[in-house]
Length: 82
Image 1 (cartoon, helix red, strand yellow):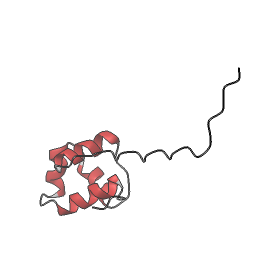
Image 2 (image 1 turned 90 degrees about the horizontal axis):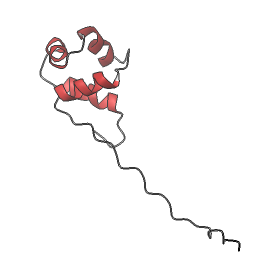
Image 3 (image 1 turned 180 degrees about the horizontal axis):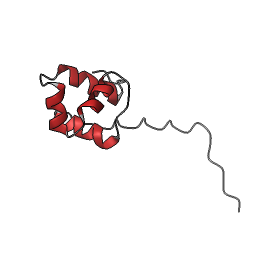
Image 4 (image 1 turned 90 degrees about the vertical axis):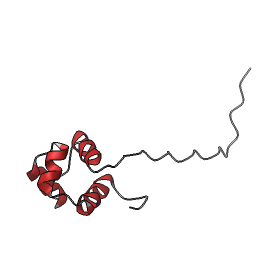
């Protein structure tokens, strides 16, 4: 998986690499098999809860990337009046 891979693409890749059948994976994560089938064929998306359940069943941990650091200010701050 690359740093820029979307979550849905990472889940699809992990599904394809998983040795379980789609039926077994659906049972293990509690998602209807037809939903997983359509997701794997890019015909639908998954809710956040379903994505979390699928990731857990696949043994994946979804980790948020750190936000980019703010650029240093290049202009001088305003001086107080007074």
